[in-house]
Amino acid sequence: MPYNLPDNFLRDFSNLTNRVERIERNSGKATFVRPTTTAYLASRNDVVLADATGGVINVTLPPPAFGITVTVKRLNAGANVVNVLPNGTELIDNAASDNITSQYVSFTYISDGTNWWVI
Image (cartoon, rainbow, N blue to C red; front, side, top):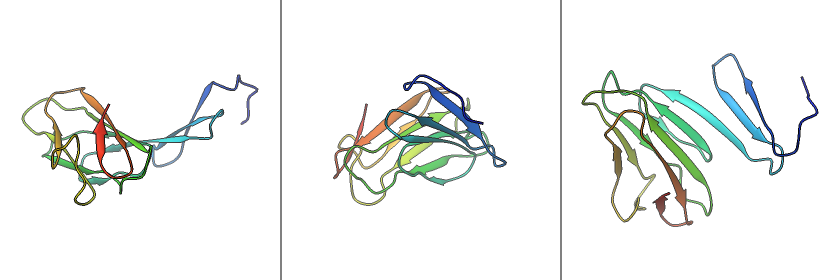
C-alpha cells in the first residue's frame, strides 16, 4: 500500500520467504536482507544475516563492480565463524578472504571494480 512519505524515508516490505526489501525512494537503491544458516552467494546490496550455530558458513561476494556493497553480520555465539570469500581471484583488504569471529559483528564490503574493501 503506497504512503506519502518524505523522499528520504525508507519503507519496509516483506514477502512469503521472509525476505525484507528496503527501498530508498531518493536513489532507487534496493537493499535485500538475507538470513542464512548455510553457504550463501551474495548479490549486490545484500545484507546477509549469517547464523553459523550449526557450522561454519561461507558467504561469497558477487563479482566486483565499482561501488557495489555487501554487508555481512554474524548472529551466533560460539566457535563457528562466518567466512567471507571473494568471487574469484580478487582480494578483500589485500587478503584472500575475511572472517567474522564475534557475535553481532558486521562488516560492509565495497568494491572498487577490481577488489573488495572493508568499510
